[in-house]
Amino acid sequence: MADEPVMIRRTNTVEEADIIVAWLDEQGIEATVYDHENPGVIAFGVTDTEGIEIFVADAEIAERAKELLEEHDRLHAEEAAVTSGETVQVQCEECGHLNSYSDELRGSVQECAECDAYVDIPEAGE
Ligand SMILES: [Zn+2]
Image (tube, rainbow, N blue to C red):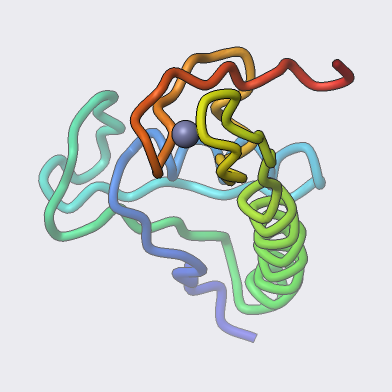
């Protein structure tokens, strides 16, 4: 089998690529970041319009890396779905309108969608 490096993932930023490389390293897979703008150099904090490519040593490792990345992506997608699906229902004390707010707004003060009165969004568990 040829020992050609195989591209397993293209990311928009070096930071993103770096996270993936570090994560793959934890899984026992050695990956390398290739930056088109600076061949052979890993430049931190640069956004490359061409994209940053992540390579592994050969096709066999690429196969494993891709499977791991798919699993990784799937887990992240599930996490995101859970977080974005959470809403807080708060009844307005002024007009009685039941407002729905994103879970991220807990602990803040928002305006009632109906009458613009201030509505306190309780912290989780209150
Ligand atoms: Zn209201």
